[in-house]
Image (tube, rainbow, N blue to C red):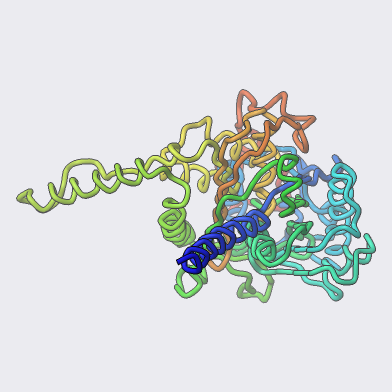
Length: 466
């Protein structure tokens, strides 16, 4: 009898030990964001209205119809006059880039943002265990990741990932790579470097679906420091709660809506198809369907299910077979305090706001980031997050939903928990006091609105004052 009691006691203790061990191991797999540094190029790289007009005029393949299309696109894009471009544009060589142009653009960002991040965190390059670099439309040999390792003399055993072609959603893909590494290794520091190289990707043709990219994308980047060290959890800024990736590459329409290709004249560019909004909506809906149960309270999920069920029953019982009651909408604000939206353009921000039922207050960070910095591709989320922080919106315990889209077609999202009260003005330090401005009106219409009244038969680009 005593032996049986001992066996039972031992089994119970063993079960408790295994449960505690599993719980303890899980604590070492948490993903914390210690700090991040957005890149702010120098003022001599600002693209104001006058200079943008000069760049458009010297693109010889453009005519009146293209001018009118570009004017409409720029005016409705939501981009201001203080965004940044690559140096190659200011030297007038955008149509004939060299390998050095692309590398120099990236190294200017690397050496600025990574150094500032490491200096502020007090972490030396030799302490980094993981490096993930994502730049979608530029690849060099050796890789950009190797150039960073060489510059900062990082360790020989550092785990390195250099990813390309992932588009504007690459930042969360890089974060997901780090999150998965954290599941297998304890006490790790990881550095994520996210940007886009514009120097080798200027389109000099006249295909409307491809010159649009010249209007939307701007220079920028961000370096993010992450760890799974539990001793540093209280020093962290954010804790990654969950991350969901949705990829619709198997659908031909989604796959081809956002793609790098050559036009009819053999000029390389980035094609944005008319079906892009439709593809983005499909990916967004599928992504929300998966992440909603992970981030929303049970009461909201139950409410939504009940309202949907009642509407369906009413629809079946009605003579016409269709319900006249409004379509049920899930309230994401029951589980999310802040919305960090990719600055893909005014239409993207408006669309997400409409689908999620967000207010202008919720959309303000994305709108202001688009106006001040433009669409900086995968790094844009961190500029939006920086705006929230600079406005002192982020308080301990708050949650932030990040939403990004990218070529493929992909929609990626994640939920962050704010670990401590945040209020650093970061990259917004010199501008946050004047944002939001009284008006976001684009000066292009005032300066170049006359183009809309020009006649195609008499218009001469050489005589146009742009």
